[in-house]
Amino acid sequence: MSNRSRQTFLKRQKELARQERQRNKSEKRAQRRQDKEKPQLMGGVDPDIAGIVPGPQPLPWEVDGEMSEEAAEGEEEETRSAK
Image (cartoon, rainbow, N blue to C red; front, side, top):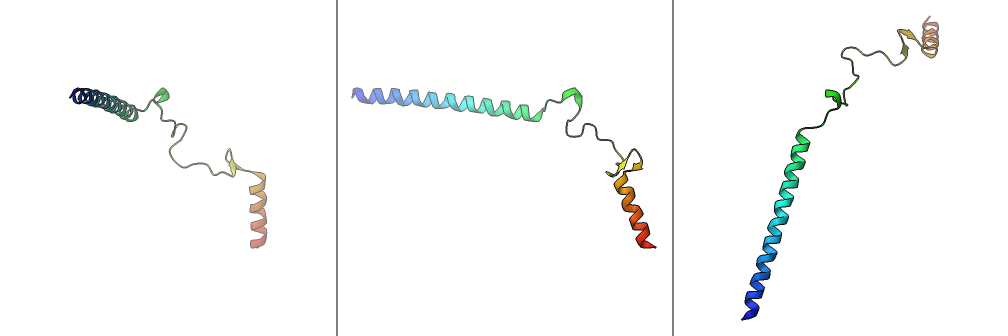
């Protein structure tokens, strides 16, 4: 009969350890969820959209409002062939 009480005691200890692990896991999950909801922004600016200017964007082949040499040559060839 002494085996029964020993088994019951071990079973209770295992159950308490399992409950403690579950409690720890749920605390970690809650912490991760809380961190996910409040992202840390550097300087109050979202890094994904930092530096983006609203409105029309400059064309990639234009440099400071002037066309690059390659684009200018390409346009000249187009106008010559169109004539």
